[in-house]
Image 1 (tube, one colour):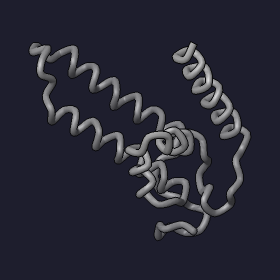
Image 2 (tube, one colour; image 1 turned 90 degrees about the horizontal axis):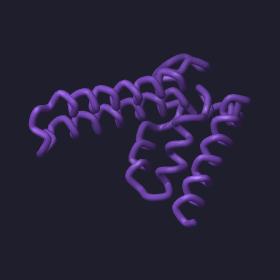
Image 3 (tube, helix red, strand yellow; image 1 turned 180 degrees about the horizontal axis):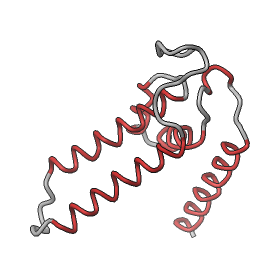
Image 4 (cartoon, one colour; image 1 turned 180 degrees about the vertical axis):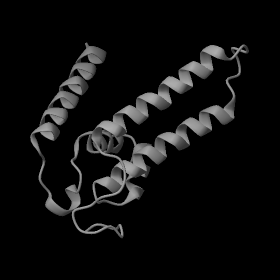
Length: 126
């Protein structure tokens, strides 16, 4: 069931594309700050904290859009579980908690993500 106060079939938060673009935007901003920072070391701690908080907030909005609890963001902090949580945030469609069906886009995203993960593991091991 949806935890939001929105009407059935309406889910607040970020859909897949805005989620990806928000993450890319936050990362680009962090890189820009790193480039413009004249002191190479130490990188300002408050910038890193703001970046992590921003990433967690974007992920929170994504999970709300899926109709699930925003507490799923804590899964990013748990090794191995973070892979599942990341793929879930990236792939699952809007309102997944209600209809429990993956669309074609989600299946493609999951397949590509798992192929990349497998390639990384094989590259590191061998």
